[in-house]
Length: 71
Image 1 (cartoon, one colour):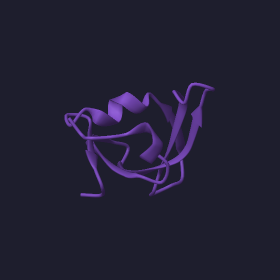
Image 2 (tube, one colour):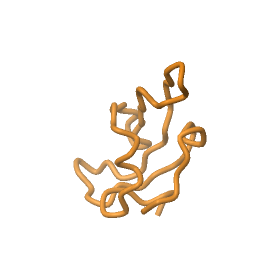
Image 3 (cartoon, helix red, strand yellow):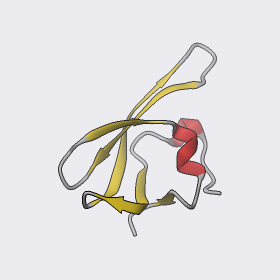
Image 4 (cartoon, one colour):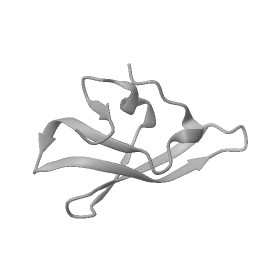
């Protein structure tokens, strides 16, 4: 499990374990919170081509899917 607090998501860097379409390194570019400070939306951007994806932020905690930082 990657230690991760929702307030520290923005601008964090991630490496995808299972690389698809040469997309490996990502940064969190947008995080939206509701009135109770719960994450409602998390957008990551691929560094190689600037494609953006909406993901479940809790998936970033899974070390079989994501590694914290760029590896």
